[in-house]
Length: 420
Image (cartoon, rainbow, N blue to C red; front, side, top):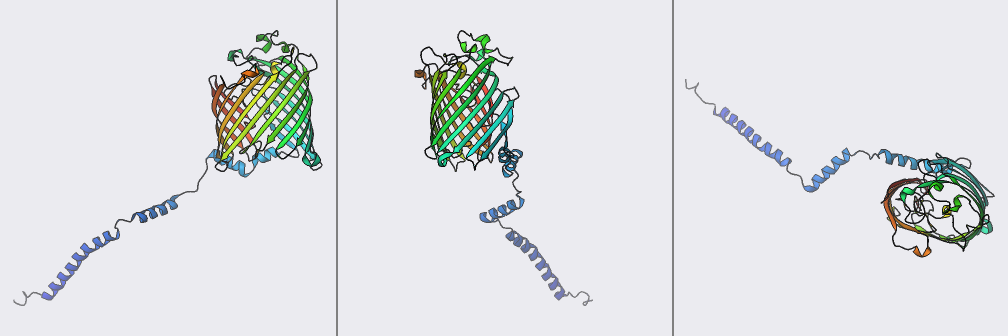
């Protein structure tokens, strides 16, 4: 009986040892695991975040508009479109605002390694505006110092706007007239340096005015008396002579980012048909471009003035008077909104590259017309502000859209040419 009740102390001790080891392991291992998962340092955490982000980042995919512009640039579609085919080139625009969409074709060819040139073009718009021209030139005579050019043009614009003369003309007095003319010019230029040119131009201009075709508005002679505007009944033909002085150091004339342009022109129009409408006109055009941020940003400024004068017994036809409004002047107003013998207009633009192939711009314009030269000053200017888009290549602006705001409303202009 004593044998059965005997305790196996060795076995008990062994079992107790195992139990103690298990308890210690269950206490030590979680603590060890917590020690392994101790909070990371800030540097280590940032490193892991960067690695995780790099694994999840997908390649940049441009939007449809940007992607299309990049494709156009990569494939040089605009350049190839403008380069044409075997001397034939497309013509887009080139007529006055209100003509509708205009299109046509131009053919040009050089001879004798560029010493001689020939150009001709024709275009017609959706509102039956027409323009045809022809030129022969010798641009590189005497080692490039002398240039000669003959130019002829016929145009028919069937519904040009006329609101009356002066800064007080009324928007509600809008009328339209048909204008037709033929021009024959011969120009001689002398290139003193790469950027300085002087020259003279002589020519003959035939003019004709008729009833406007825009049925929404009266024809001009129905609202404005022929007694006040006798040129509505009889139109002059002119011999004219011009002299010009030009400084041009722009980097690209049709898509300028730096440099400047300065031109003075004196014109004399001699009415040989009626001896009633002879006049003189002086034009000054100043443009300056200030680039920064590697020409990705540009501040562009332009000031343009025209001053006209007549001798005793002579007058200036209203359709030959300059206008300070429209797509290249006051862009918050209709084309030809203000006309008179004299004008001044100033434009200021801030342009920036939105992405390749598209520049954007914000602008402000100010100007006025006047019947007397002494009233051409900075008082009582009409003004507007707006924004625009310039679809371009390196060499030229392919399409310009400007939206201008003035007290007469909002105007939108589509032009296939730079603002200035």
